[in-house]
Image 1 (cartoon, rainbow, N blue to C red):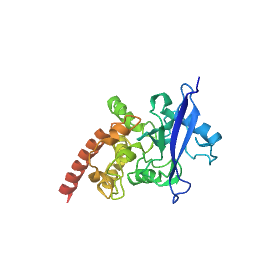
Image 2 (cartoon, one colour):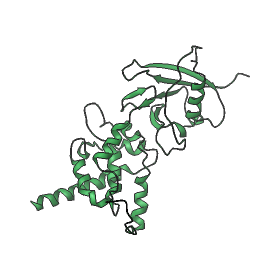
Image 3 (cartoon, rainbow, N blue to C red):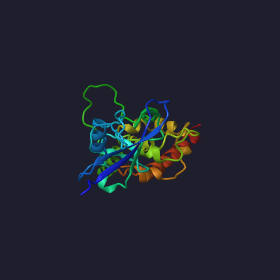
Image 4 (cartoon, rainbow, N blue to C red):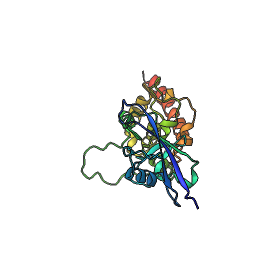
Length: 249
């Protein structure tokens, strides 16, 4: 009986300015494989389907349980985590590409630094004055805490950015991810201190006004974060902020 094989088509690029190419690989099928396991096996024996020796495929991973966001890539046309992409659920040949909205470093490794820079712009943190003991933290309504937890699950994976049509070479739009974090920290009892600064950041270049409301981000998020709700809620916060600024003159 012929062995059942799994076929991969992987888009590769040796350097940031290099020429992209496609290479095919095949592995013997086993139950319960995921894409990360298969990439590991290809890396250990980098021989193409045609029998040609090649260089090991470069890619990133860390937690292997869909928490860190490092193994984001485009698998069969969809941005997702390779660690949770099960071979049994994927149509063959399995087509793997790097995220296209970020600069390529090599093969499937991309530079997601822009996402972290956007988090800096919107001050996506709780700022504390000093490291000494400040006493008990303010109590948070359980309903608010439960809602905030949804947004705290963001792992900066880049899937929402990849899916967004407004994030392109002709736009400076940050994407939905930092907006979700603004929603999170503006609701935090201590994070509220920087609410106006965050809203001002989103009113600037690349901010929320450049969102086209395509809502692709909602479908793309592997953690099911309600990014559409975040965009709507932050828009309302900005409207109130603008009205207050108008009457403060």
